[in-house]
Image (cartoon, rainbow, N blue to C red; front, top):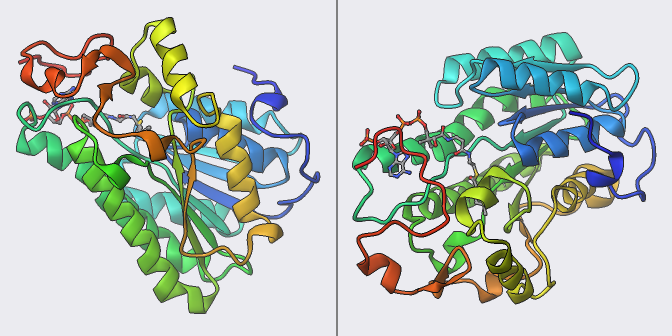
Length: 304
Ligand code: HXC
C-alpha cells in the first residue's frame, strides 16, 4: 500500500541525509517500525527488515523500497527474535548484501490485554521472550557489525506503561522496563566505542495494532481519551519516525543512554483510572468483573 510521504515524514529533513547508511529493523513490517524504516529509506538509507511472518515482511520490504528510486530493502520473513541463530543469520546477510549495519531499530514486540489473574506463566514468558530476550539477541547479533560503522546507533521501541504501572499490562510493563535497562547497559558498555543507544517510548499511536488492542474502539471514547492527553491528540507514526530521524542524524549525536517518550505527555496523566479510555470501565471495577474489558480485542486462539 502506497503511503503519502506527509504521513511518515515531516517536510523539514534534508534529502540524502542517510545516504550510504544501512538500517536493520526487527518487527520491521509492523505499523510503527515500517514507517520509521520508510522515513530512513526516503532520506537515503538502505534497509533490512525482519519478522516472523514471511509474506507480510517481504511485501512490506517491497513497499518500503518504492519510496526512493534505487533503494535496496531486504525483507527476511520467518525470523523470530527469540531464536538467536535466525537473527544472527539475518544480521549477517544484511551486512553482506548491503555493506554493513549502521543503525538498528529493535522493534519486535508482543502484546495482549490480560489481568494477572488470567495470565498463565507461558503468556508472561511469551512477551518477556519476544521483547526482552529478543532485544538482547538483536543487540548480540548486530553489535559486531555496528562496531565497524562510523556512526553506530540503536533505537529500542519501548512503551510508557512501566513509569506508573498499568493494570492488564503486567507482562508488557515488566518487559519494557527491562528493555529500557538494556538500553542503558549498551550506552555504558558500548558508548566508549562510539555506539549511541536510546529508547523511543511511543504513547498511543493512531491506526496501529497496539492502539486497536489497547483503546476502546468507540469513536467518542477515543475522542475523550485524545482530549485527556496534554498535547490534545493521539500520536502519529510520523511523530515516531521524525524522532527516529533526529536520533540517527548528526543533530542527535550527543543524545545517548536516554528514554525519549513520544507521547504528547500522556504518561504524566496515565495510570489505573480507566481501561482503554472507557469511562464505564473505572478502576478497579474491570478487575473485579468477570467480563473482559469492553471494546478491546482478545487475541487468544483458545479462549478460557
Ligand atoms: C491471555 C493470552 C492471550 C490473551 C495469548 N495468550 N493471547 N493469554 N490473553 N489475549 C497466551 C496464550 O494462551 C499462551 O499461553 C501464550 O500467551 C502464548 O501464546 P501463543 O499464541 O502460543 O504465542 P506466540 O505464537 O508466540 O504469539 C505471541 C503473542 C502474539 C504475543 C501471544 O500476540 C503475537 O505474536 N504478537 C506479536 C504481534 C503483537 O503482539 N504486536 C503488538 C505489538 S503492539 P498458554 O498458557 O495458553 O500456553 C505493542 C504496543 C505496546 O507492543 C504499547 C503501545 C502503547
